[in-house]
Amino acid sequence: MQKNVLITGCSSGIGLACAAELQRRGWRVLAACRKPDDVERMTQLGYTGIELDLDSPQSVSRAAQQVIELTNGRLYGLFNNAGYGLYGPLTTIDRQQMEQQFGANFFGVHQLTMLLLPAMAPHGEGRIVMTSSVMGLVATPGRGAYAASKYALEAWSDTLRMELRHSGIKVSLIEPGPIRTRFTVNVNQTRHDAPVENPGIAARLSLGPEAVVAKVCHALESSRPKLRYPVTLVTHAIRVLKRLLPDRALDKILQG
Image (tube, rainbow, N blue to C red; front, top):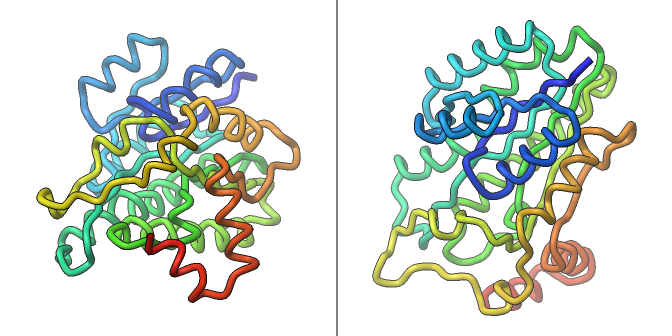
């Protein structure tokens, strides 16, 4: 039986690269995008296009119901990949902006996943994969809002994994470092006169979205998926430094 997987944030970058590979491997890909034009493009590419705006509870509810109907109540894979970055000093971010950051990166993920679990749990199998970030491991100046949303996603994913331990549903986190996608271009900067920019070394160590694809496929297809999949040398290095260095020493490195 062909397995169904829903991928959010499928219009470009990591989501689109994963959709192409999973379709090649025989999966039926439900490709969720925020913009109607992108949904239509996904359909033209041979995927099942779904309109989804994670910042809108009504949109999330409609998309979840559509997914359940299209899969006849049997969804095997959910790749929560969509999200965006809000960059700027915390003093420049108001409550509404912070709520929007969490709405897209965290609250929408929670709502969508809870609505889709009834299409997974009764079958005693499934995979839930999250796109976290190296910013879910450390926070740096100017990226506090984005890091906070990814820290929350990490904790939420750990809890969900333990709560579903007897269900047959496995939960994994993908933790990319610098990846060459449109993410940086689409970052919402609160200070256009002094935008937060990635250090030069990040560009030199960045990888293409295909670096994430193998990790996502393993998380979806392996009988024993990993709990976390670090991607890029930057993420691997940060994981090591967090274990070895005192907090103040790590602060000095991250402050630049």
